[in-house]
Image (cartoon, rainbow, N blue to C red):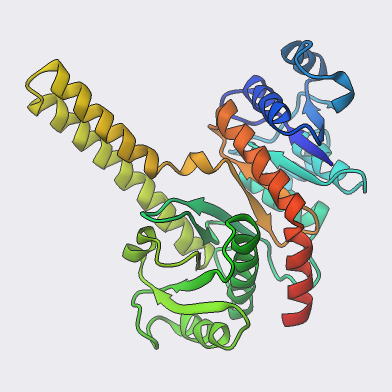
Length: 330
């Protein structure tokens, strides 16, 4: 197994990406890595930590910024790390790619360079999200602002197979995000998608309201990219505000140092339950080969976990299963 690591574009710099990769290589001995980035600097970080036969390099110090228009940047920056990495992925010897760089550039590059699975209308950006029970999949979260019934139906099928292969769900439950849980709710798109999913082969359980998704009522929650991104950003904002309110309350009401430490430990344990970053990475579903995105602010531990996700995805053959089912159903 050979995977490509785009080392540039991460908030914490290429060093953190390399250290995370080395940690993953310690945990999984059966894969090799192609590093895309500043070769000599990466070698300095690696030193003699890993057998040199397990990695190779494509040298560049150019990357696409988050502020750049993705398609324009892909055309103008042919030596950008994500462009070089995605083109390398086209070679048969490489199995998948992980990047912490620009989401827009990764999505556009994946679509234009790696290309979509046959019959897939648009690849979907998904995330693993925490709940009170088990993690669930939320998709799309920003790649496709305007969706059709067919697109949402394909997202549901792809998400279902991802949940089966990666979450280990034998018969994953799939719900459609809507303004009400009752049948017949929502706009024309939601109503028509409901009917299509009800007649599909997946375990469709109906509509779900946004307030219910974090109770773990569905393994896969499907929506358009505009709504999904709004849900995600609202969740992040509420979490930050709630965290600040709790911290201020602790500082104001804890009478002793022991009480303050106890309260902070309790709050920290609760916050870790709903930490999105702990899931490491997630794929752009619908591409011919696996392309995984890890959060730009990921540290070495999160990156190592993200690589583990990619390895599991490859070992389970999830991408091939998705290809096969989409050919049958669409």
